Structure formats: C-alpha cells, structure tokens
Length: 439
Ligand code: URA
Image (tube, rainbow, N blue to C red; front, side, top):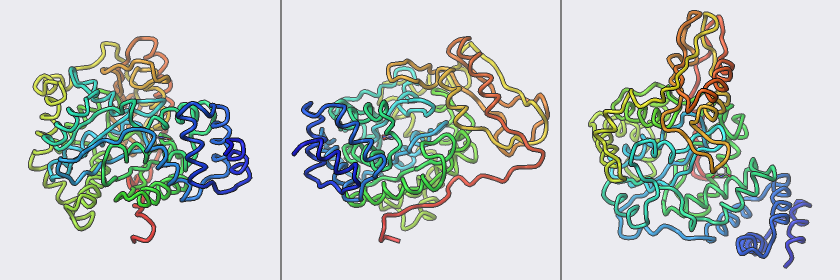
C-alpha cells in the first residue's frame, strides 16, 4: 500500500477501506508517513467527505492508537456529556454531580480553552488547589467514591488525535464533519463511558454557524457512536449568545454552584436540565426525557448534587470552605464596565465577539502554551431580550492586565445589538437527534 494512492483515491471521491485508513493513520502515528501526505489526505476528506463506514473505521483506528481507561470493578452505569464548545458553557460542572446524585457515574476527561471557546479544565483549575492531572488510580478511586471525576487527557489517550488535530489546525481542515466526529468519539470511547449525551451547538459562538450544519454534525456523531456500540443521543442547541450570566474561569465555577443551589440563570438551567434528563434516560434511571427532567429537578431540590460538587473539590485537592468564601470576591483588580449605548432592548449579545474579548481579558488562549487567568471575565447584568435605558450597566469586566482590558472593552461594546421592540425569545434546544432507526 502507498499513501499517495490512498490520497488520490479520496481526492477522486472513492470510499477508503478500513485497511487503507488503518495504514495511513497508524503509519502517521508511527512516523513512517509524513505530515504533508496526511494533510493532503485531510484536505481530500474535507472536500469529499467520508461514508459512515469510513468515519467509523477512522474512529476505531484513532481509538486504538492509545490506551483506553479501564473502569472494570467500578459499578456503572457510565454516562458522560460532551459539548462541541461554546462561550460561557459550564454545563459539565453542573451535570456531573446531578447525574451522580441519581446513581450514574460520569468519567469526565475534558479539554482546555482554545480560541474563543472555554475549557472545563481551566475553569476547575481556577479553584485554588484543584488538580486535573489525576493518575489513573486516583481517577478510578474518585469516580467510584464521588460518582464523577474530572481530569485532563493524558498523552497516552488517543495520540492519533493530538497529532491529527494539530495538523488540521494549520492545514485548514478543522471544520470537516467526519474528522470532527472521529476526533470527538475516539476520545470519549477511550475514557471508557458506555453512553454519551452530545450537546452540539450552532450559532456565532459555535464551530457550526447554522442549525443545518450543526444537525449534520449531530447526525454523524450519533450514527457513528451507535455503530461503535455506544448508547448516544444529541441535542442541537443555541450558541448565539454566551450561556448564562458569567464568562470566566472562577466566575463560571461560581455560576455552576449557583445552579446547584437552584439560583442559576434561565438559559443555563434550561439547557442543563435538558441534558441531565437525557443522561438519566441513557443511564437507565428514567423511561423518557420528561421523567428524567423531573428526577433531576427533584435531585437539585434535595441539595445532594451541591454537596457532591463540594466533596469533589476536596477529593481533587481544593478546599470547599475557602472556595465558598471566595464567591463574589475572587476577581482581578483590573476592572472595567460596559454600559448601554442606547435605550430600548438588548436584541443580542454576540457570543463570538465575547469569546474573543475573553481571550484578551485572559479567560482563554490563542496558543495551547499560553496561560489563562482564574480571576478574569465578564458578568452580564443584562442579556438578550432585557429592556435597558441608555447608560445602564450591562457588563462588569475583569482583566488579567490593563492592556487586555483596553483591547477587550471595545469588542464587548460591539457584541451588543439593540432594538426598539423586544426580540423574539431564543429556544435553547432546537431538537434532539437519536441514532437512525431508533425513533
Ligand atoms: N473538538 C474535538 O475534540 N475535535 C474536533 O475535531 C473538533 C472539536
């Protein structure tokens, strides 16, 4: 077999066999096939796409390129949630303890912020002392005891994805549905979960800018996941505005505990409960999403998920009491604000602009090696649909330094649109997507 023949076959729209995909990807990981051939192949895939069979074969080869987490000996069911990424998206932090309170175990392996999207690991590490580099044994032990554990991906988990993702990033091939599908699912399969709820986002702050592309990605993910033996379901959700009222690492942990105390903002609570309801169904705790949602609402009222979250902070190296004392005060000293330019209604807050302003503030990063600030971020006092008078406070802003603040403030101003009449209300969940043949 020769890599060039595989590239040319895909370039002409042919369907690659499992052996051809295996040859190319395992050769790449072993260093026998060079970057330039794999990037030519990725570009051919970008334009020609892949069949369901090819996507499943790619997912399998990527999964087998590294270790798989061994959860044997721990009582399931194991159910995780994965989001395709957004701005202000802290649902993982709220969902894991809700699911755990229902007797579901959530083995979470998460990523870091990159570009305008936030990362769960950076949020958790904003809690002083909290460790996200758990050893396998620690991960298993905490998962078993607390019902969930939150760690980063080790170098041994899906090495093919680390190499391929870096190559896609510099070859203009990130936004390919089969490549995204294999990248996400290989990592989720490697963490050992049996079931997965996907939050596939569309809108300005998402990878997929419109609902049609979002639905295509969701369909590819659920069908490939089901073909790989996972229980899987996806929700197609709105990411046109930042989720919730806080964007920032510590700020988002704070907002998560607000939600666990039943005081979360409407959009964030709605999305979290819809995702949690699906986790309850896939974990066999509810017959359907409405029963799942009722169970999750009752769990929240019991206070158990909040306690599990605080227990997990202790298990992973933080101090829950000092965390609670830091609420409302752990903020950078470099502070600014955004006030309404005009009166009427806020018609929209553009998530993409807020995400990029967040990078300037120190919430996120442009390069993987950049540091982030725990105490930078934005608190929205008004969201889309709210009435404002000119001069009202719309955002409180905290930055890692003055230069970052000055760069971010004009962009945050630009993120706001106004209207004279109330805008149409947003639907957080557009639809749910099940594997083909199950509905
Ligand atoms: N997230 C991933 O993990 N992989 C992709 O390719 C895109 C988003």
